[in-house]
Image (cartoon, rainbow, N blue to C red; front, top):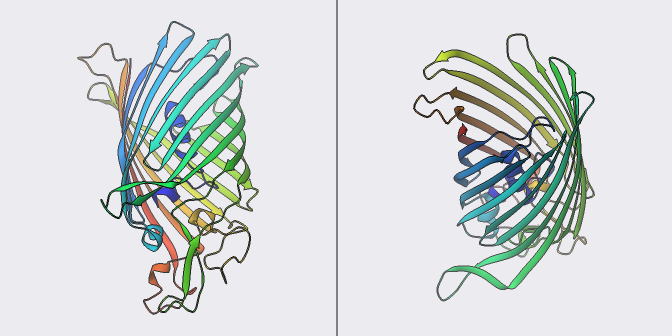
Length: 410
């Protein structure tokens, strides 16, 4: 998921530029069982993220349609309107506004109790382009009590750097800077029905990244007593060109006697940069208020998520000198921190009398509040407010995510 930090946090629920890809894959979704194609439906989403000096907002559209009994096609479009004046931008660059657009398409093929899926996603913004292809296979077995899925993703990124032309004052790509990054991910998961009320999901994913993995905008800082008033100098980050990570998760969903459901999940993350992350999440879903207008009903849900990680082995908020070590980074996603996320949502499901071709419709509203406390990332913008370099207050981020989601099944 602070625009480029929340979105690109890797040890947590997302990582790198692939966070948006994964979000879109979640929106596209996979069928609950391997012997059932996804329902025909159309979804429209508006999202708004606000926090840490960053605002991200925009629409997302998805349409899914079956052709016969064996094929299902999906098309999607996602757009972010981004404005940023975050702590990182204010320290080493100027505020910016940009638009990010993403298109995706996928196909599901059902053969017996097996579903084969293939898809492609293209994402672009002024200083970054990403292409991702993915395939997966999902198989039901043992009387449909067990579903085994395997997947593979391959991504190609082109990284640019925006600069301001001194003559026209327009923002354009720096012709001297163009980097590339490649990504591969392998996943396997098992979904097992334990009882009529309990389902357990186990998943494992391995990811490899190669190429330019840093940010061309963010800087490290190192002690420099010759700089009056600050005591430090900024310099470019230096990242390793490779990164391998793995994540394992377990989720248990239990359906309660009064039509509600509770879900618990744990996720463990580890990578070759020395980051280890732990995620614990608890979700609760409660249907209510049946027989509302248009034969409608309500569903309420809440979630509580806790995440913590240690810092990368080449991260420091303040290096003692220039060229202190081979690799040096100061991105917040590499720092040690813990976060708490609280989410609340409501869904109104209904049938439109004047639209008999729609089998069902729904309106969903979700609000999520995120609080991140950093253990070794300081607010360097306060270095002139009575704080000595390296002793500024630790940074804290508060952010709110709002989503309005409309779906129609046909």
